Image (cartoon, rainbow, N blue to C red; front, side, top):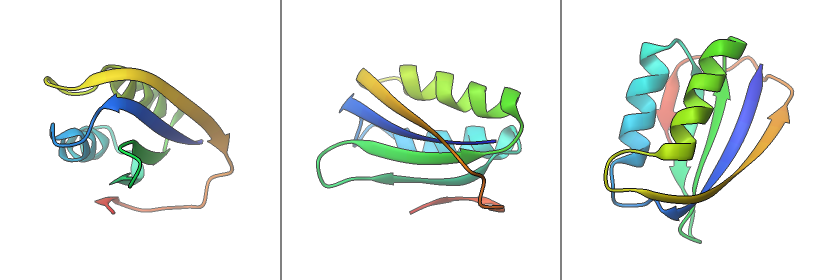
Length: 87
């Protein structure tokens, strides 16, 4: 499955992207994560339903130091991504 998330709040400059990458690699999730100019963090997760749910749950909490105000989620068609990268 594939899910794209947009995380709002104090989410840049708190190792959100790197922590997301490490978790994705640990759970076998492919995709990407990036900072957006509007201060949000956006990510796409592709993998098993359980693994994608774990990454989505992490996005709702964020790493220590983050303050997540809200998360938009979009279920999308998988693109067949491999690996996980910080964009």
